[in-house]
Length: 160
Image (cartoon, rainbow, N blue to C red; front, top):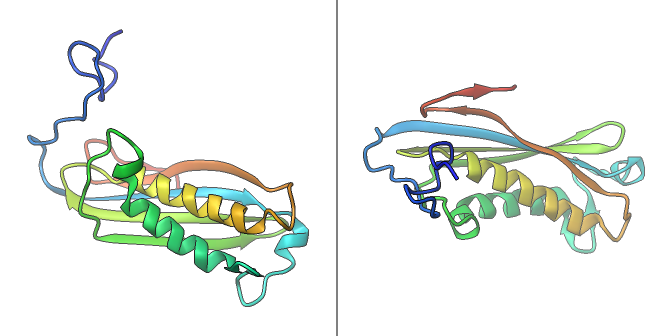
């Protein structure tokens, strides 16, 4: 196995956290999104921009869950660095006829990026919506979780 192409392998091919000690400190931002298919019946139950259930307000709960998840990414993904996060914003926008788009923006000033934090936040927010709505339908689907934008590192990306 050639470790030149995988940043989380050392010279002998063993798993290793990337050494960022020599990197420059820069402002880094990442935006990820996830789409959840709710179905038109569930989306029709929107009231004041949220879904009210016995478990509580779905979107508000998902925003909190996504924020908490982004902050704990290093506890979930073994090779992620614990980093000081300066901003997390989770937004959920209903999309007619049957879905919602979750966007998670994460920002830091440091030596490593926040792509995994943004992806984790968007993913966990989608999972929270799924959990809170599954009693209403088993036709829920989480789709298209992807990095939309990143800046501040060696390579930038913009799919927005």
